[in-house]
Amino acid sequence: MKSSHARRLKKVARDGARKRPGHSRAARDQQVAVEKVALHAPEASAHIGTEVERLMGQMREANERLIVAAVHTQNQSDEAHAEAARARADLDDLMRQLRDANEQLSAAAAQAHTMAEEAAQREEQYRQLSSRLLTLQDEERRRLALDLHDSAGQCLAALIMNLDVVGGATNALDARSRRALAEGRSLAEQCSREVRTLAYLLHPPLLDEAGLLSAVRWYAEGFTKRSGIHVVMDLGEVGRLPAPIERALFRVVQESLTNVHRHASTMTASIRLTATADAVVLDIQDNGHGLRDPLTQETGTLPPGTLGVGIQGMRERIRQLGGIFDVEFADRGTTVRVYVPLNKDTP
Image 1 (cartoon, rainbow, N blue to C red):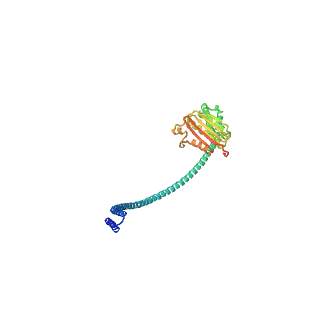
Image 2: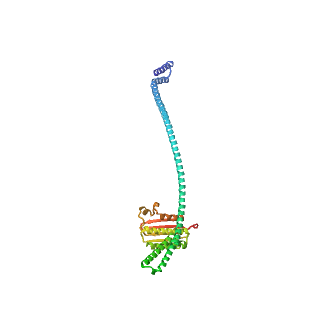
Image 3: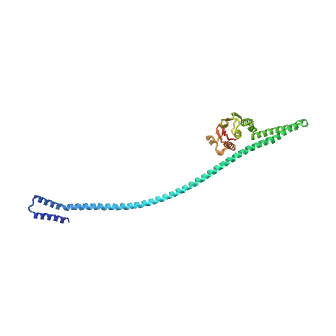
């Protein structure tokens, strides 16, 4: 193909020369140029063919890459769809679990609310029952005190008088009978004193007749005589307080001094009573050895489960009055602190 093209160019050049023999030098130059072009035409054609083949190869490679990319994209799209489907399924499962957890949480919250309401009702019932029991206890103490004073006390007083009548006729008795009579009268007097003391401890008449200050002084003096523990009293002029407050504070003094006698191993204690326009404050302190429990020494208070019945009873009495009851334990003694507000509606 390339050689035939060159031959045609040469033929055209010869034919042109024969037809116009008289042309100028310019014509001959043109003929020479044409011949040169005819000579170089095969090389140019070969170069162009090579370039075309190279471009075609690149196009094929690009087309192959395009096909591979399309296939890869399709595969990735399928994988993406599959991954999206798995993610959607996982999300649906998580949403289901979340709904189940929310339902369980709602049920647990409802149950906890119900239990809290029931606990609050039980606590209120316990407080009402505890208040009723303490009231019944005070009433029973008052009744027993009156019974001891009016029944056993009067009987013992009559017995002593009869023994005195018999003692007036000592001339008719021998020495042994007179000794027995004297011992009997002494025992009767001792029983009378113990019955009177027991009646006063159950419910001192001074508490109703003269008020808290007189009752505390009387009890502390008697406590010192019975136990040998000296009680220092700092009693402010609090005047007459509402009866429930006077009874509660007297029981705190009574129980606290009893605990001092039983546990403190000390020979001194103190009672301090003060009052303001809004509250009355009672402090009872001893200088004993305190408690040796490590937890108690660290915190200064007893764990709730270790509180005695007496302390719990005192705390409940003060709580019913809207007050604060606190016990502090140290290496060198115990302090009971009571704060009771003076509410106008306190009976």
